[in-house]
Length: 384
Image (tube, rainbow, N blue to C red; front, side, top):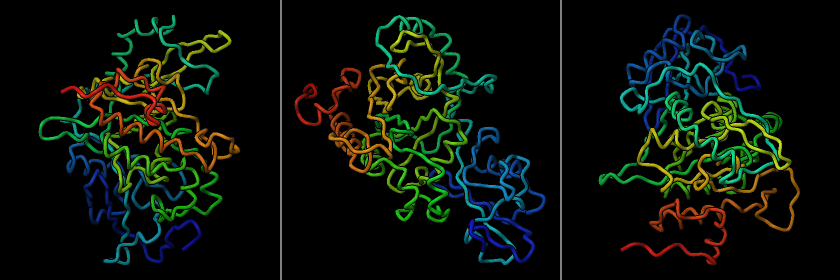
């Protein structure tokens, strides 16, 4: 076995077993001919088993031996074998395990045509979005454009929302990734000898370096009260790497309902503090609310380090301090810097208080979350 955890094949591989993890289910496709079966054909078999159309399937965790992207035309013979992936039942069979994401046709709220144009996301700008500004009024008037964009966005469910027998749902927590929950570095993973066998485990020291302190504790805590959605303004390629390498898709303590990337962000124009107008993209929660009508401004929190991402849903935004691993500690231990950052613990406590308050979230000013945690502010009395 070489250093990159690739199995050194001593006999020709004739068959492959593909094991898909789909939510809590494991789907086995056994004894597939290695030299003639393509990923596209695997998707067709998964469609028959799950009802998810091939074009709606996202497969995470497979790599090719050449280093090229895995496509529908990739043969199973050309997949890179990970450590201990040889099937114990046969010396000439391999097992590939991967994560399947997608939504069965009958569960899709909107069935649009594929997008012809996808929005870009620009770099960070030195401004915050102002409620009630000229730009806000202008873009809220473009509801028709936003509605059309929403209809063109497909959501691939990983874990279904939790709906009780009496038709009650958990509130929704929409989570940004970069500088909110983690500070990602592919170089750190490479330089520390990151092992595929340790992905998502407590032993994965390299990946754990990238997480904001108490990230997993925060997510497990929040999951008791909220359904979780990840919305990152990076491309799907990088988003897939982050979620997989950090073990967030398969963590035993919490589940992610679905994931949105930068292609689901909507373009608006706002002004920098110097007055310059800049076009950038935001995260319109209407996309989620229109497809899952049991969620809305009354029961949604959007956690992000960039206030401008709240532009079209001002009351739902909870701004956290941006987290950077390499910034030196200052006096405030919740300033988002280094090992002493405890901000996620405070936000977790606020989210618990909020979820158990029976309050309409729209009526709570999230800017003062610290005041609710330390007791200087109180939620309105519960209605009898």
